[in-house]
Length: 146
Image (cartoon, rainbow, N blue to C red; front, side, top):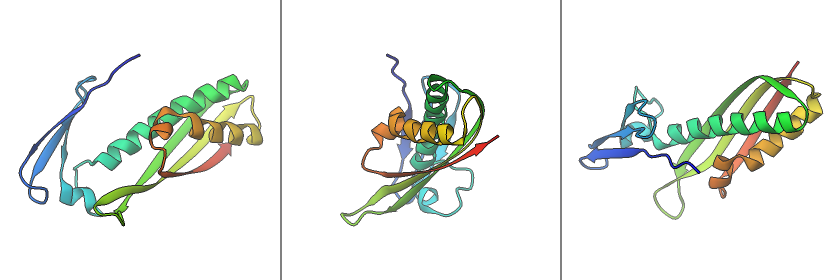
């Protein structure tokens, strides 16, 4: 199976330093990271590990849901997936990702609402990124759009 690579170059202290995350395998870009921006309400043009996890989770989940819908006899016409990744203080010290809220809106042929909702839950449980994030509370808000 495929191996994908990213790298980060960091300079300076935690609070005053900056870094750049490079998506090495795809070559699609290099993005600035900063700890103060990571924990602030406004990202101000700087990404974070949590945003990158949200991106990974939404794309993985959309692919998995598409496959589960197909296996159930449906055809996904449009899937709109978002993820809110919450970073909080860890009682044991430092920070932790405490929750991920997935939201999906799906337009599907060949499945009714109950079939779509079942597929959505199955995809949440079986998507490789969800599996990698075991131990983090992952919720799902799924809406079937006819």
